[in-house]
Length: 237
Image (tube, rainbow, N blue to C red; front, top):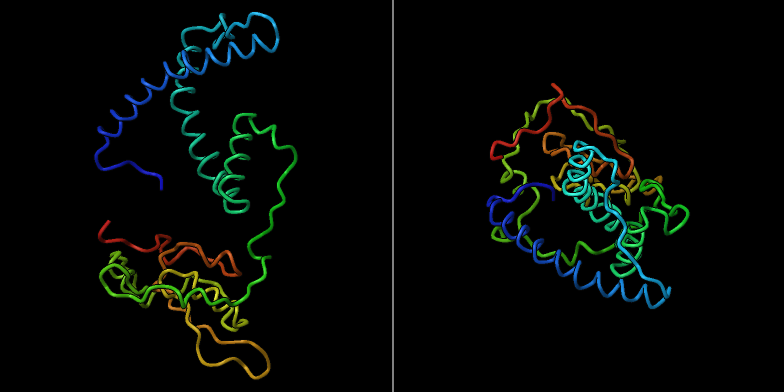
């Protein structure tokens, strides 16, 4: 989750302190070891490269420092760890995902070569499972049902507002079950039994419950701007 902690200054002091301790360890510890290894391998004296070109102006130096101190860490956290690592870890596991993401980051995207094969979410076959039977039952203390969670979030939406959700109301049961389980606000419910002509069920849509999470767009649905273009109002946030 992206955001600031409630008590930001202890976090700033801790990060600054650990960074100040880590820098000499990396420079005088790891740096010396790497320097000695390179000398042993090449048989020549190794000197550290210049971090900044000598011809840079004061403004160029300031921009380079700002990039290295502010922009680069944010880019690393958001892209390489927040997006790339998570997607690789979900596909290949934690260890392989960490290895691939670290290789891509340190090689500036050169390695691994080529493009990873990805498939659209909507193209992945849907099959009913049974994992929901292992979920804990709501006890209204630590585990809450979906409608109670929507109420506790302070979501405020007009019940008579026009529906902003575009989905087929008659779909195969496995698709309807996927919608029902994906939605955190109990927007989609199955109505009646499957059609005798095939495995097709009616879907009831309670658009006023929608919290605009976008999960339905992964499997055949589409969200349009609600009336007025605003969306749900959270009175407690």
